[in-house]
Image (cartoon, rainbow over all chains, first blue to last red; front, side, top):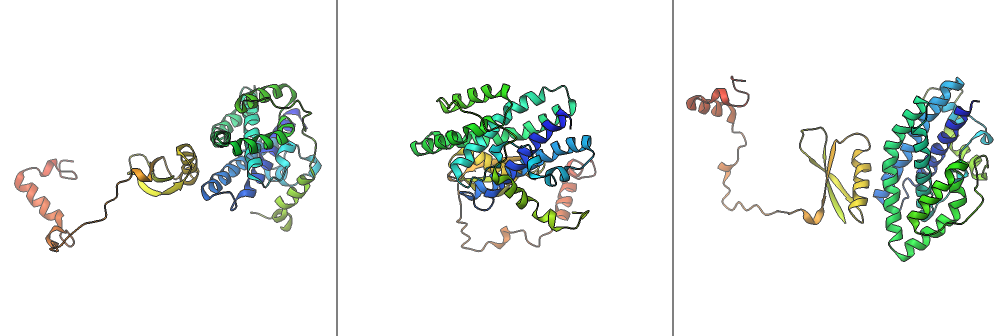
Length: 223
Length: 99
C-alpha cells in the first residue's frame, strides 16, 4: 500500500468513525435542534469518509464500501480519539472541538498538497468543516461562559488531550497545542499522545455494530 | 429564545414561513436553522426573526358582513380587460398584447 493510500485511509477512517460515534446522539441529544444539527454533522463526516475512500479505492482496485466495512478491525487506521464511545455531552463536545481543531490543521496541509486530487477533496471538505467548526466554537464559547460549563469542559479536554494529539502527525502537534491553549486560555499537560495504530476495545465492538446489516446480506447484494 | 424561520426555495421567490427553532442565542439559532432548513439544499436563503419581533394581529371585525368587499366568484379578468380597452392602456398591461 502506498504512503498516499495509507494517509487517505487514516483520514477516511477518522471521519467514518467520528461520524458514526456522533450519530450515537441521534434521537437522544440534549434538545431537538441540537439533535438535528449534530446528526447532520455526523452525516457530513460520513460523506467525507466516502470521498476519501473512493480515492483510495481507485488506487487499490476496490470500492469505498469494502474499505469502509470489510477490513479486519486491526487494519483500521483511525485515531483512538474517534473510537471512544462517549455518551456524555461535555465530552462529546470536547471531542468534537478537539477533532475539528486538529482536522483544520490537517486540512490546511492537505489543501497545499501537490496531489491535485487530494488538494481538491480537502478543499471541498474544508468548506463543510467550516460549519462544523462554527458549531463546535459556539459550544466552547457557551461552556466557557459559566463556571459549571468551564469546569466540565476543562475536565473533558484534559481527559481527551492525549487522544487529540494522536490525531495528528508529530510535526503538526505543536500547532494543535498552540491553538487549543490559546482558545482555552490555559496550558495543557505535556503528555504522551495516544497515537494511531492503537486499537481501543471499543473499535471492534463498533465495527460489529456498523457492519451488522452488511454482514446479514448475501455476498454481492445490491443496496 | 424562539426564532421564526422563513425560507426561500429559489432566488426571486418569496420567503415563506418554514417553522421555528429554539436556541439560547442568535449564533446557535443560525447553526440550527442552517441544519434544519438548509442541509438538503431545500433553501437558497433563510431569514431568522426573534419571535418577540413579530407583530401579531388577530382581530378582523366585520360587524355588518360586508360581503361586497369579497371577491369570491367574481371574475375580474374580463372586466379588467374591458376597462383597460376603454382607457386605452391594454397594451401596457402586464400580459397584454404589447408584451
